[in-house]
Image (tube, rainbow, N blue to C red; front, side, top):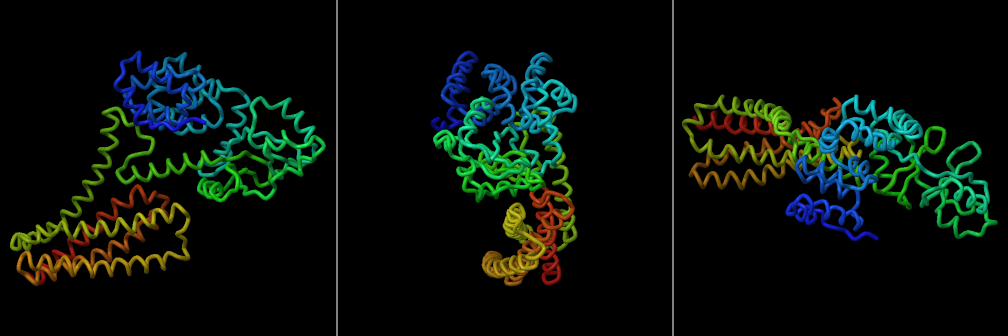
Length: 448
């Protein structure tokens, strides 16, 4: 069993070493059993020139697994630095799952070269996987699984395993004469069972299975509720397509988390820590431009009440409180909705109940905090009218924030847009505009 190693400590060690020492230390890490995912994270922490040099010095059998574990932009930075000969040698070693992983993030000409260079068997598996969409688990299932007829004896099973299996599988999948999936058995059970036993007597038949057209989210849920760390994937004819395992579930969950974490700022889960300056500037500049438009809308709302602000300076001091309270309240509801939608918990049947519940929470919190903030503002500026004005704005804005926190992700999902990507920007704009309008509008009526 490999001992867990803190990648941050390994990165610190490599960063302090010179070029020659880096390669020596990297090989020591490989020898200690550092897995491909950790190696990928380690290389991602260095500028492109250094990561390419370290990748080249990895054992050849790790080149493809480490590249596949990398984020898409990082992977491309390495591939883009290779010579034509190096690239062809690398592409020729791709397996079907790696090619699927790479296909959406590399130029078409590189993928076309890969399809010409990989083995015929891997290409056939790749073509089968491409029959399913990106969101269907059949595309991502590991198809290289070992199968045996369920009706044979253990003795016959051992002969077949010895004859055809070069690597020892943990599980062997069982099919009937019509090639339909009927169960699976531990390899160790076959090895230790009496040879006169029938294979079907060892089989686990009450298993969680997935249809190849089911979603990736369904696969993650199935693995969570499975008694074994793998879930067989079958097609509509019950023929075995392959399997997905707990590692797939963990990696996918991590990618979903990272994607949602970065989406709110217009970033992508595949972005490189050392992204090229011009490319990074362009990508982030687009999001900054969108944010500018929303900020202008909020500023225009404030501009409508320039007269009252110039006469009652305290309004300018208190405006950030109105915006902040509405923004936080809306973000809480939005986060809850995005999580619920990701887990398929939000449906047409419970949307109204969710809206009612969130409006109740927003309104009650609005009243409580309106009293507190209104009291503080009234004492601060010695004005009961000003305290009452901001209190009313807080109630309106927090109730409105709860409303839009529910409605916005539902509408974005209906139009096939990611609520985690655009939801926070739209919500912030709505709470700012409505909060400022409620606060300054009320002030203009009662304080001028």
